[in-house]
Image 1 (cartoon, rainbow, N blue to C red):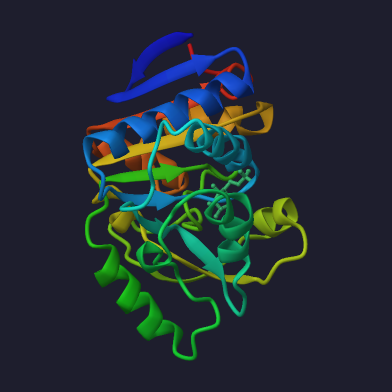
Image 2: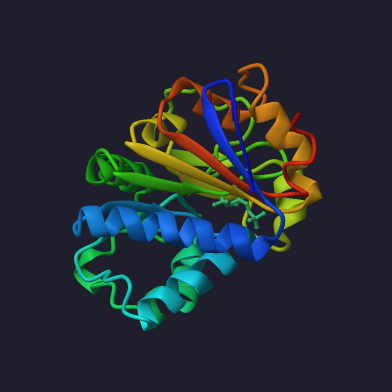
Length: 234
Ligand code: GLP
C-alpha cells in the first residue's frame, strides 16, 4: 500500500480492488465501533459492490453491528427507487440495519422540492460520508458546474453520466456538495483506469468543472484507490 497526501487529502493506493474494499469496510467498521449510532452516508454504483460484500462478511463474522447505525444515501433517480433497491439488495437485506434507521431520498415523491428540503434537514451533519466518483468528477449526482455550497436538489444528468449508467432517467435527486462537505469524515473510493484522470484532476486545482475537487476544502478526507485509479498520481 502507498500512502500520500495531495492538497490536504490523504490518499491510500492498494494493488488490488479487494484490498481497497477490505480497507474501506474496515474503516467503516472502526467508526461504528467508536459510535454505535453513527450517521452514515452511503453511496451506490459498481464501485461500492465489493465494499458491501466485505461489510457483509464482517457482519457475518460478528465484527460489526449495524443495529443502531443511521443510514442515509447520496441520490436517487427521479420517478424511481433504484438506489433504494440497490442498497436493499446488496446491503440492507444481508445485515442487521434497523428499518427505522434507514432514511433515503424518495424519487417517487409527489413534491420533489419538498422531498429535497426534507432530506437536507434530516441529514443534518453526517459522521461519515462514503463516496464513489463519476468519470466526469461528480460526487453523488453533483454534475460539473454544481456549486460547492449546493444543497439537496433535483439535477439534470449529463450525457456522459447517462451513457455510463445505461438506461436510466435523465433527472435525479442528489444531496449537494455543501451537504457532503458538512460531514465529519469523507471517504472516496475509486477503482479502475477509467477513473484515473478525474481522480488526479480532483487532487489538482480546485474547480467547479471537477465537483470532487471541492473535497479539498475539508479536513478528514481520505481517498482509497486501486493502482489503476491512482495511476496518474505522482
Ligand atoms: C453514480 C452515483 C454515485 C456513484 C458514482 C460512481 O452516478 N450517483 O453514487 O458513486 O456515480 O458510479 P460507479 O461506481 O458505478 O462508477
